Image (tube, rainbow, N blue to C red):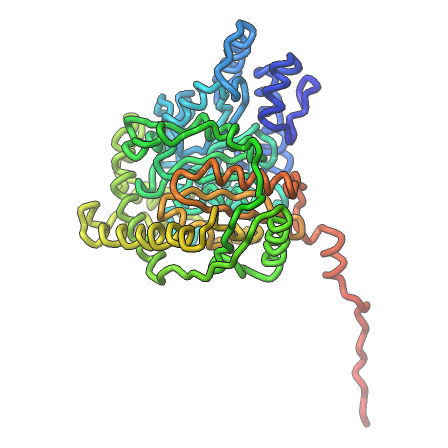
Length: 523
């Protein structure tokens, strides 16, 4: 709260309306979010979701307030404070680190095109969010949400639970109302998993709808930024600003022709008459998740949707093919990005990063870097084996996967549980996530939307809507209709541990008081 304006759980539309009505200014909103970050992110429960604040945010907000007074409005986001993941370049004096101490001096002084589009639409980027270091591509045994720079991001619902990765900081921050909305990035699950864990709407767009230029890469085949927000409408507003063709990213050649006003596309959203296919392979995560998903399916049917179960199992080789593709593309993409870094950054290649980590105890204190080392050993993008793995995986996930299922069963979208509830943070065993929803849309490059569908003992779980390329507007409309029918999102509770809850504490207490057993004595 600053100046009497409470930003908690306030939508982008309400912020815009209140600024238009003179109830609050962009400057006051920036101050309010900054105060909240200091109170609960850097102190209080110490969520550790915001890795850096934009030192120019207040000046930018004041300038936008002046434009408003002069009758100039840039768009629906005019003056709205947002956060972006710290693998996305911003021209504000902050470093882009990917969470790694190797890039602590990486002050690029350039906006990624996606950031420039958001600023052009009036958004104020107030800071950068923590992430799983190197977007969770350093080790199979990583702890999602941890980075050498930012430490470990907590789940705002239950603080000893994971925030998922790799856009963990964005997920926690937006769930905790540290900004109006945020931007994450996904290669496979890195927008949708943290959104599901944090009770958010998260959209991984079609690869090529949003530019990836000046974003620290993993895979040119699968990487994309995506909006993360507390409602479908907020996510739609962000995507409308983010989408578009960029000459520095050839994958976006069709974006201008494909993009639309995604907020307007929500008008009249309905589930009536929609045909949805349950991706059975991605269900049966565990019985309590199944129960929440079954309730969601029942609600979809009650709203007029026809729901059919689709029996489909992707090839056993799919995950292996994807892994080899990511390893090869990581080396090529990261070397290209690092070559453009300021002179102050000593690491100019993946080889340099690996050596830096070996020489820096904090970086390898919790887990290793075997994936970086494996990527370094790959022969390059011209390798026939890489090209075959990419072709095989793309065909299996796309033409013979999502496309075939949608066509054969005459579906508007596929649905599945996004993920199970957040697991306990485990610094020894690493992550314990449950979910298979992301791999098909990730490899195919198709859109994947997660929307809150309920909770398990106070931990959010999401419902996935998956469609063909360029179907963002249709998926958002389906998600919006489901959101309006269920109102499933609940604000975070900041519970220290589930064992503190009365019901669980009672169940953990013996039903019968302990008795003293006396040994009998025989003569």
